[in-house]
Amino acid sequence: MRLASIIQTEVVVIGAGAAGLMAAATAGKRGRRVMLIEHTSKIGEKIRISGGGRSNFTNLFASPKNYICRNKHFAKSALARYTQHDFIKLVESYNIAYHEKTLGQLFCDGSSKQIINMLLDECQSGQVDVRLNCCVTSIEKKDQFILTTTNGVIHAASVIIATGGLSIPQIGASDFGYIIARQFGIKVLATKPALVPLKVEPSILPTFTQLSGVSQHSVVSYKGVEFCENILFTHRGLSGPAILQISSYLEKFAKEEITINLLPEVDLRHEFTNHKNSKQIVANFLKNYFPNRFVEVMATHPDYGRAITDLKKATLFNMADDIHKFKVIIDGSEGYQKAEVTVGGVDTEELSSKTMESTKVPGLFFIGEVVDVTGWLGGYNFQWAWSSGYIAGQYC
Image 1 (cartoon, helix red, strand yellow):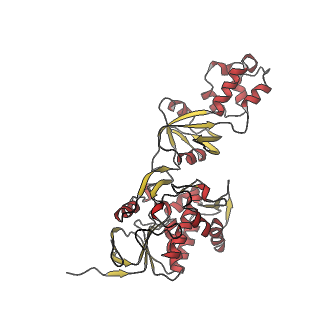
Image 2 (cartoon, one colour):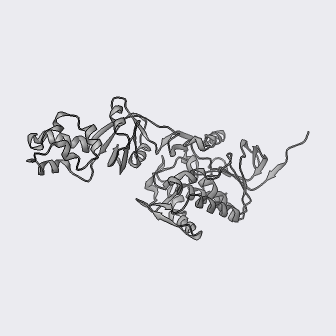
Image 3 (spheres, helix red, strand yellow):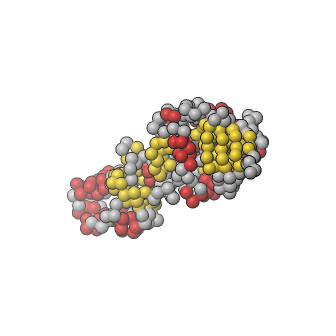
């Protein structure tokens, strides 16, 4: 019987996404012998599809306050030691043109493939051995880690898990990282989709379906958290940046109430008071602030067909409050298929915030989305990938 040959290396990085590429490149450029394993045939798929193909690769304002984590202090160290400005400097060193879109979000002028190619060049500089279509079937630890893969058996001193969360399974997302964590006795917190479109309760769904495609600048609030960006009505409920942002904070997706200020820049009570003697019909008055279709669908009560001057002040104020405090009952999300990231994952209490190494299993690191650190929409999750990948690469 022929024994399978053993591949000896120093560091194995599992997962060739944003975090894995950064960790592999960093470790390789330190002089470590690194093997980067990816179970699909493609590298950096989330980078490729992000930002409409232009990659929202970081955010000028990234700071720990932009992240959700059970331990709110955990992300501070990584984000401070490899900042958005460090990554921007790397992008500029490759002469990749970029621009700020809104709220500090940075995008490539050209293609997201420029970021992928940059990271691959960094890996090449560190002589990283990249293996695609390589699946890990088991990991055990003796003196070293022993990985059984479809490419053979690999021995390594350190293993970095950069396999991501459960979001976007169509590009290869899996629960592999959580399985490995649990195998080694590392706690994994419950997961749920995040940055995900929301469904609304059946009683109001027909109204939302009629509004499908309508966008409105709004403030969306939930239990003291609020985001001021556009919302988008869909045939299933709500989407748009403000909705995606608030979705990460929902404790559950069933029977949760969110509040939407549909007109945050205008005080409608004040406007109705100023126009109290106007003979303009309320619905027509509201078309100064909303798309016609929105008013036609939402303004169904007979009072909206009456002149402002004919209505009592209390009635007008109730109309204003309905718009500024629009209550919506959520009845689910569109799931991991449409989620950009995953909330939950490997418990940060089990990791060193300075190195991303397991406190129980020396040499085992977890980085990126597989960890219970979830960023806001707008480049924050990529920055967490760069930061956590960099520090793991420094210590593996």
